[in-house]
Image 1: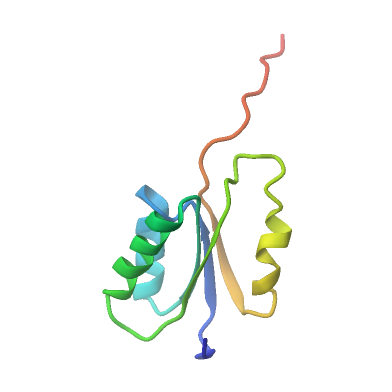
Image 2 (image 1 turned 90 degrees about the horizontal axis):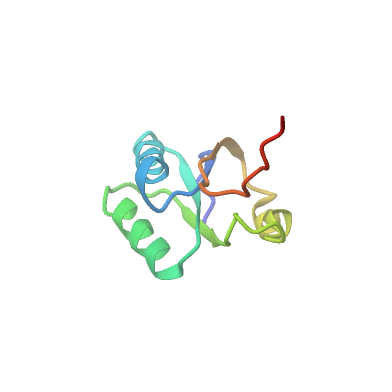
Length: 102
C-alpha cells in the first residue's frame, strides 16, 4: 500500500459497537486505520463499510482472539512497526475472570 503520509490509528475490537464507531470517526477525520477483529469475514465487511465513506486512506487489519493469553499481539503487530501510529484505542472485550478476594 502507498503510504499517504497520514498518521495511523490502531483500534482493537473494531468490528462492532464502540470500536467500529470510533474507527469510522477516525477515518472521517483523516486517519489511516489498523483495525483488529477475530473473524476475517466480519472484519472485511467492516473494512468495506469504512471505505464506502470515501477518501483515499489506508485501512489495514489483523485477526486474533485477544481474549486468549497466547494471542501473540507483539508478533501480530510487527508488520506495522514502521507505520506512524499516533492513536491507539484498546477497545477489545472479554477477559479472564478474577477470583474475588476477601
